[in-house]
Image (cartoon, rainbow, N blue to C red; front, side, top):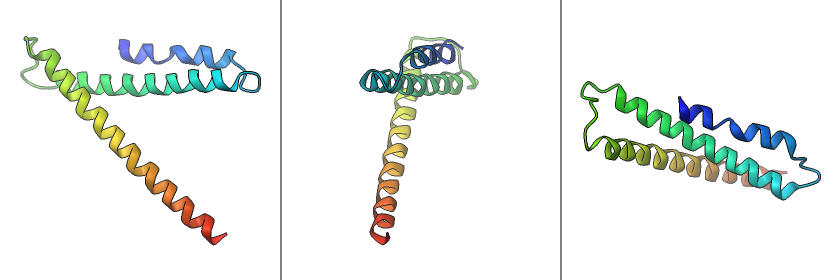
Length: 99
């Protein structure tokens, strides 16, 4: 629950900053917000995946298990983003050549 609530703090900051007056500051705060949201979603999914197991009792290895799930979900998300970004760039490059 906390990981979801913490990701909404950037909305207030972005609504105050004017893009026309401070484009660099707006981009930095917006980028931090996007990264914060992504980490919150990944952390939430890692913890939910752990708690749905039948053997989800708290032990010494619990933080390491959640950290491993977090790392796997984060790397999977990063790889998916890179693949789709490269595919989009290639498709746009092809369409630009036709115009």
